[in-house]
Image (tube, rainbow, N blue to C red; front, side, top):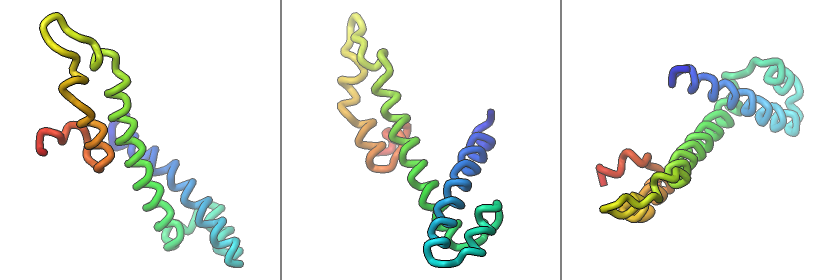
Length: 112
């Protein structure tokens, strides 16, 4: 699966969640017909759906970034000492975690 198709799949899944959230909101506001349209798979141009999708995509990107950093720390080779050097984790000193929490990818560390 290419990165574009993986992104499309994730966005599609999030779009369904965004539709659900928007429909619930509209239902609670008494906008039953709009909620019905969204539940039927339409209404992606409704501001409520677009805002919900935007928020969910932002949260998903953050979770994915944090998971990538966590995977690095979970990799046993990061903690293995080599015969003539310290484990890579000693050199990292938490830099990957700080980068992820600051909204940057680990590969961006060389730009600090």
